[in-house]
Length: 112
Image 1 (tube, rainbow, N blue to C red):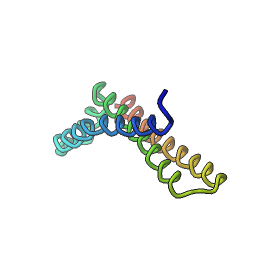
Image 2 (spheres, rainbow, N blue to C red):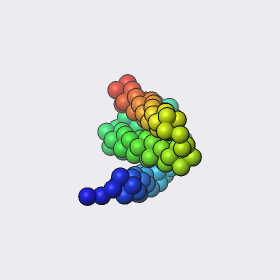
Image 3 (cartoon, one colour):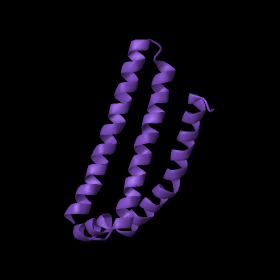
Image 4 (tube, one colour):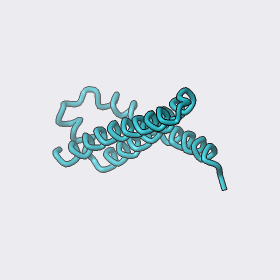
């Protein structure tokens, strides 16, 4: 059975590997749609494939954010109570960032 540290390491690498092609796709796509009107851009974001890829990217980034910032808290906070508070705040921050981004994609998809 893998240790907690091994699982953490593997999940950081997995989320990073997921993000590389998705970020490249996103940069190319946004540059390709740079001259679109607002309505055309919203239509692109609301297309099913684009929305799914954005949701996967958002989930991956949010989880990777929680793992990475959690590691920083683990490395620099040594008092048990503050460590727990720091980890909780990191998790809440990652959850909030992910929720706002997901809400945005879902709202655009349903409105457009």
